[in-house]
Amino acid sequence: MKQEHLHDLGRTFDTQQQALTDAFEVAILRNKAEQAVTENFVIVNYSQKALAVFGDTRPIKKQLRDLGGLFNPKLTHEGQKKAGWIFHKSKEQEVRDFLTVK
Image 1 (cartoon, rainbow, N blue to C red):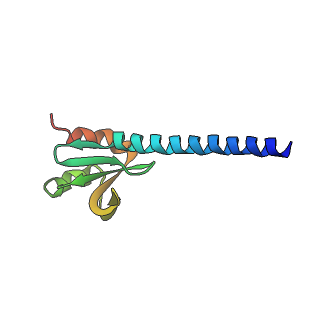
Image 2 (cartoon, one colour):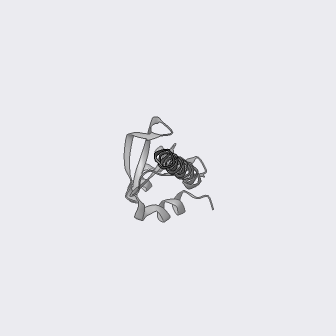
Image 3 (tube, rainbow, N blue to C red):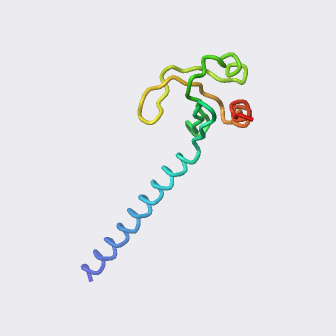
């Protein structure tokens, strides 16, 4: 009886571990899909409430500021510190529209 119970617990653990692994892989794929490259800029869902823009933004810094962006020289992107602009998620469509080549 004890051995059967331990076997069931092991199976439950394996199932839960696989579910966590699957969820992690889905999160990674979703994050990659949420990144968009427009011209020379990368738009990234930076957190639940923010998005970030990376790239050579110096020529358009006034427009990014006017859209509500804040420049931050120490954002993290792909494991490295990079300069970029941070925006509230509510500005996402405006930022994408501005940066998209038409």
